Length: 340
Image (cartoon, rainbow, N blue to C red):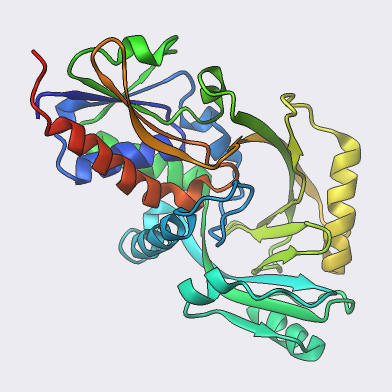
């Protein structure tokens, strides 16, 4: 292994990919992470980070379900073996006033998957799961147990794992990935939305979330009719969301959007109507027409770029699956004879 691997990007995709490379046997002194923004300043840090399948706000990809399944397995393993990683599992409910089309992917992936068409059973099940009440308009629902990552814990944990393995993280902007990918250098492009500079298929999807104090809600809920969702945290807070604005680049918090989110979520669970708002945050999901780009590309400067970006709102959901695939591509290139 004579090549040096430079992972560009320190969001959940970049950190996970670098860790997977190390787990697959690439020596620590041959891996470097370089990023303009460190993990606490990336979109991953404001992610709701609920695992789900099919992946949320990501364009269709034939490999997505496999990536999600691989990530589910890994997150379940981390919760069991590394409780300090900030992974916990909650019941995740999808509700609707209209008949739901069965989530075949969830049914095939999650042994806990259930679906009902009974309002009384829905409310009884929700109460047992930690939701004291639900609007009586919903008639159909499905559920499965889903991991959630507390990103303010999980991202530092990933960084700590990398540090323990001796992998360096350098804060620096890389103006040109192709120049960086010189002979015997493999660049792994995990820059997310910044990849729009080299790929016109990449575009932002602005999302706004509201964080409230609602420790009595202990299950994740998605309303398929309005698009609103609520995702609990172990500290008693609840992330309320449901906005998706494609091709919007601003980071402005919009008060009317906050009001819309809270109205939609209160219509689902009335008890949160007067819950105090703790924070309002905005982030950009890095979407890509055609789905995730996960492939190798030769650089005109003699090296190789392995692209791993375009995960949309499903960075966590697909993180370990795409990390494994990206690592395989890197290892295949490292085994090729040197050009020197």
